[in-house]
Length: 165
Length: 93
Image 1: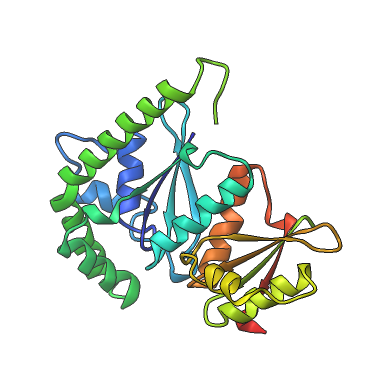
Image 2: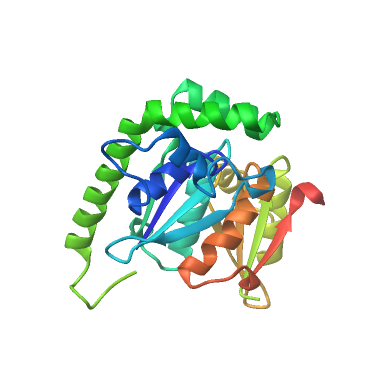
């Protein structure tokens, strides 16, 4: 089982979602701005990283968690990747692609753009972290819903200890 | 090499004709070509087997460099590898 949180550049929303999923960030009370800024991969991805996948770890059920930078055409990219899965005879439903960008508010997006696009790292990173806090409840709900859906899929498709992806 | 993938963002039709020409002696009928060209961006269409026995595909894409990076990272999760794919980017000629 592979869970892939994606956003534009794998710098902000997908990073927070993956860390929430892996238990590296608290859900309630929310993390602080300092905790978010201290994440080694928060607001770090470069333009060259667009398209890449980043393995972030395994969750409590040993599922692999990734972030992906799917750029400005994520629907097209997902269509392409899931077609590749079908060609390889792999059930595309074994991959949970989760759009984390939809959770992010204006402040985080603006901070992210200032830091990543315009090079105003100090200002942009702090603004992005504050913006992430504003969006935190939505990101927590996204991760909880993802885990619920993944567990439901596993109940339907996996035999205990005999089949895992 | 097992698979050959023709991709294009701007020259979709040229890429399709090149992929088709690798498999079939005659060009696609207009109806067949229009049907393929109407495929959603990102979809991968199987064209057929070429004379070397390789699977020939055609895909209309956007942001091709990003797609290929994603492909390189994603294929190992499927038990596949970019080493099994030859990519022909028609936009680059």
